[in-house]
Length: 114
Image 1 (cartoon, helix red, strand yellow):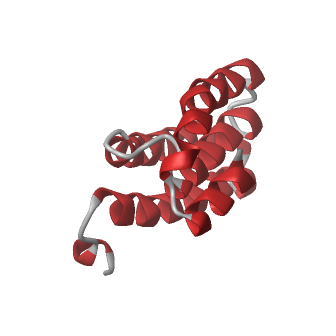
Image 2 (image 1 turned 60 degrees about the vertical axis):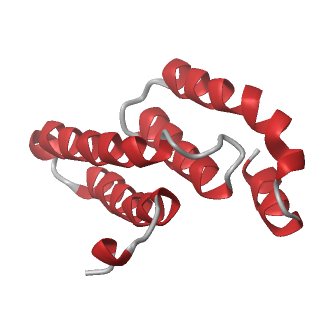
């Protein structure tokens, strides 16, 4: 497994994003009676990923991808557009201010998510 080899929070977050995406996709294909269980599982995956995201700058492209994935899960699976919008707005307020601190490659990736 690759996760134990991840050396920093950004790497760990990246791998947890993949787990979150998988679990969110599962929510789209399971039977309705199993959906609450899969939503809870996906929420736990997002909570774990969020622990790694906390120590990362809001303008970091990996963190922005996580916020994009998480807000999409909230909007599409949990059907809560208001909560998804609040999440994105809270990150974007500070992310735009930090763009100047990024190298060109990371800045371009971050702008793509913003």
